[in-house]
Image (cartoon, rainbow, N blue to C red):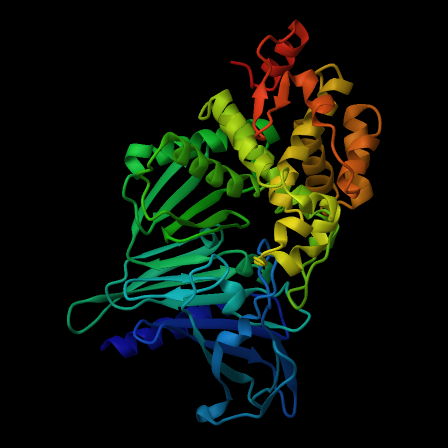
Length: 522
């Protein structure tokens, strides 16, 4: 049997097995994905299995943004050669309705195929990339769903070019298997099949496929995989050991782990990282050999940031972010919580994990503080407003940015520090911001199974602190100047003239106790 025949048989058998025993549905979806490494395209074919459809139509949508990447990316701009066919590959009518919406005519016999190509030549964590030996698949810009039906199960099959050996993705938490098909010349193609429960899961599960370093291991009863495009220096950094420490610290902090499998996808040189349901996809420096201890700690904080997003935004999420509307912005005043507090927990996790020293932790906080405090923008835009305007300014590098805007990635973690100090002060060190995060996680994610509103966030803070955090809410909601000395003094901290966060030289007994409780003492 030749290679082409084997592939057809494998595809048909898989579709048959996938369909058997399923409850009656109006349609079934099966995606077939191949890669054009010369042209840098992802070739997509969607097979729709429906009932008799004479004269019937269906509307397909493709997302215009990816959750966690708060910018309209208009993914359909990379799409070309859209076509719809039926019996004997006969063309069927279709028409475009808006930038990300296609209305198609279904085949009378119930077997309709939709095909298109995606140009994949971007190096950002929300977009796809195809190269000679590797491809990164960002699903939001590759797959379409039936309009209004994100909860439909979908099967996706990836057929990798000859010689490609690996598939890394959080989709391995769900139903999946691989198959190697041998060519006549003795080489093999790897085929990976996934049955995904819904499109929210598919869109939140990027894949790295091709040739790269992989390692699977277990930690505290969960399974993990590392996928590294450029693993140079990973052993010297002890990336696995440090990552496991971060996982253990987060587990102890939150009291729960919301996955059974986690994929850490690290690509080559580039910028940015993106959190996902049970994975992280990050560009790195192209090496894990760092020029200084400071650079090493900064990178591990980056890993901790994307991991803690597993809790804070994937589980603990503003109400406006769920359910997700992939057709337009998800406007929320609370993204400063999702991103800013996650930046704060970078250093907290590294301290809990015993990775960063107190001095290194203060240096991380100082980095954020110095990125906004010396600039005029904080007097023109509140932290709350920055959550709304991120959709306008996520990648906006206007020359006047620091003069008229504030970035919640910088001011957010500093406000997180003030929140933590205030709660500890009000409760005589009996409670902290950690209790707020746990309560949000358990109440809204696990019990109520929904996001939190702005008022509910502040109500939880008041519940934990024993009284409303009125002054801090005013700091978040307005552009008032902050008297940092008054807020930081109890914790034995102060701000220098050159915007450094430092410990006082001769702390009182109370300040020593405060610093020790926050793990910032010498």
